[in-house]
Image (cartoon, rainbow, N blue to C red; front, top):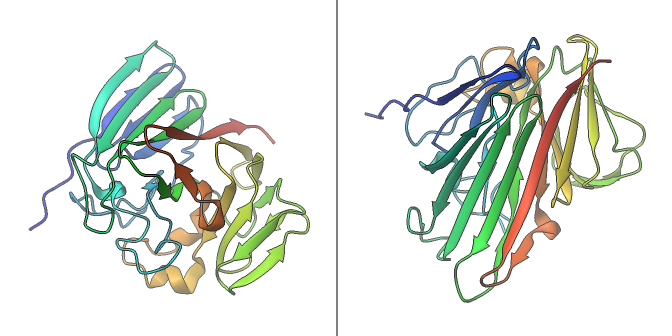
Length: 278
């Protein structure tokens, strides 16, 4: 029988509320003071140790999906269901910075036999910042895919638009086709797109009457995902009709944009979300 997941670290300051789990170093709740929740968490959530948390911002590492060559398990890597070490918590009354670490001394699966050190620094405040740092602790180069797989809460995914991707090329994982975006991204069916850009994007939400500004550093891809009704119904940890209430907009380095980290070197990727009025 699975063990219940330990309680998360809770943040309540003058500027925000939030929570962060040690498992996966995963943020599952964040909202600036007076604002509606910014992160979606499934209504069918079952918090068990070793089971992925559907919602918030999972860490996908060191591969994306099944990996570049396919067949890698578990999907999106092994650190999102592993317990990380809470290394530091800093609180200045407005922002709280929570730093988690994990390494090959903690988790070293047979299909990833490489020495590594991984750190996630999460700044919870009026904005939400996450910085994932990969350090190669071995004596040979390593190649990693990574994503900060943010589930963003929306009023109705069928009414939102995503600006900032016009003219960008992308791989449509639903159809297997290469495409170029024309105008804002709107949603009328299953979406799973990997855009080749590291520029900011803006999620415009008329139902919640807000804009979410998403910016990244150290990433070459923006991934946009929603399963839509039919596929969501096949996923046991997505609640009934939950699919209308979220859109994943991720910062990533995937496929041909995987990152090579030399021995003794580090690579950092940052994901930031801010809430603005429309």
